[in-house]
Length: 280
Image 1 (cartoon, rainbow, N blue to C red):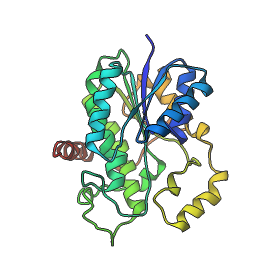
Image 2 (cartoon, one colour):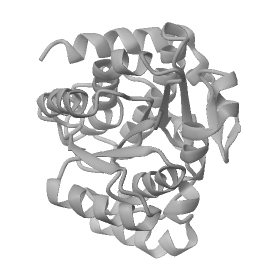
Image 3 (cartoon, helix red, strand yellow):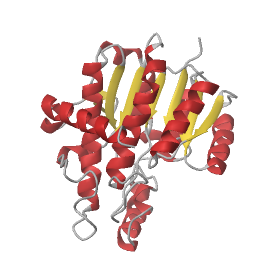
Image 4 (cartoon, helix red, strand yellow):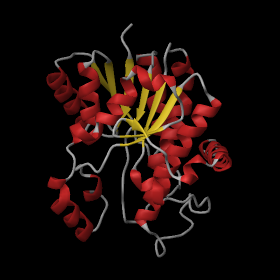
C-alpha cells in the first residue's frame, strides 16, 4: 500500500524539500497551501524533481478555521487514506496581527491551525497501520514561555513582541506532540528542529531592518534540502516508530526545554486549544 503523506506549507522552503524527498521514496504526497496557483506550480516542480506523478494538493489557510475545515473535508473526500501528517507550515512576524478567527497570528497559524487540522484528520490517521504526526518546531522553543492570556492578542499592538510570540508558538508545537503521544499512543507523534534554514520566513511580515538582516545571513544558513533532512527522517524512518512524543534535532532524539516536558502545561494547552477551536 502506498503511503499518503499530507504536508502543510509544501509549496516552498523546507516543506517543498520534504515533499520532494518523500516523493522520491515512493509515497503519495499531498501539499496543503493557501494559494492555488502557487500550489499547482509547486506540484509540477515536485513531480519533476522527484520523478513521480504521485503528487497533488489541497487548499488550506491555517489562519482561517473555515478554510482548515474545508481542507480536511476535501482531503478526506478525495484521498481518504492518511498515513503521515507533516505540520510544517509556519510564519514569523514582528507586526501585531490576528487570524480571521481573532487569535494572535503566530499562535493561531503555527499551533492552533495545525491543532484543528490534526483533530479533523485523527480518525483517518488511526486507520493507518503505522500513523505518524510530525510537528516542525524550532530550537527557539528553548526560550519560549506559554502565556495563555496572550492567545487572543490581549497584549495589543503596542506591547507586541514578535519573537516572544514565535517562541511561544514553537514551544506549543513540542507540547502538542507530547500530549498527542500521551492521548493517542497508537499514533507516532514527534516534534523537531530543522536547523537555521535560509527560507523566506523572516522576509515576510517583518520590517525592513529584520528582513534585510535575514537576507544578509541567508547564504550562511542551511539549504532547504538540508533543513528538511530531519523532517524526512521522522516522517519515514522505522526507528522513530519505536518511541513516541520525542523531540528531534539533526535526526537524533534531543532533550527539549524543561517547559516542553511539563505534563500539566501540555494538558492545559490542549484543553484551552480545544475550547478555542470549538468556539467558532
